[in-house]
Amino acid sequence: MSRPLDIGLNQIKSLLIKMGRLSMEALELSLKGFFDGEGTYVQTRAWSNTILILSEEVEDRATDLMALHQPMASDLRTLKAYIKIAYDLERFGRYAMDISEIRNRIGEWEPIPDEEGFREMGEKTKECVTMSLEFIETMNERLMWDMSKLEAETDQLYLANLGRLSESEEHSKTIIAYLLTIRYLERIADHASYISESISYAVTGKRVSLR
Image 1: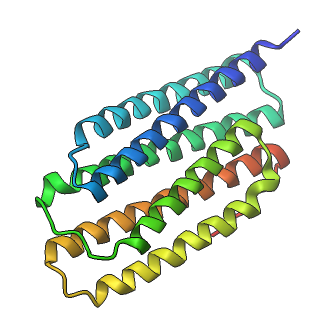
Image 2: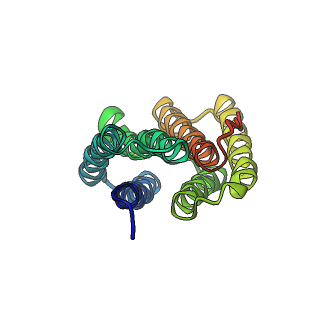
């Protein structure tokens, strides 16, 4: 028979998975809007706000479980990890919204002729998000080093694209739009790695930093 605490933990995990899937949809839509010149702010903002509400629900439920059920050390680690992960997932949604808002902030811009490096960074960032969701679903902390490699590849693309923009003669609006976008993508990848650290802590009790 399941403990009430186990039921509560599973409910929180389901909320985190829901948040993760919404954040992936928001990221995919924001990148499509960025590269295709489409307005996606209204939808990504709605998803970001929903993710924020779910994040607050995770924190409330975790706090209630701590107060009511006297969790053991391993359960307490998991609850603490879940609260941190909820924040990281909320950041996914917020950065996706920020990408979609660039067009509203600075107006239209001309795309860079060869966007391959920027699109590649977008795809690599989505891989980081996908892997972070796998961490949440499976609690497989051994995937941490795969995440470390993936996040490092994203960083390399960020630096390469940053270098290209620093030498670009494109219009200032174009440079600003791409610069902001790759910065937001780099931050999303960082938060994905933070999720892997939190899962590792929950499972092993050891704090490992990939930074």
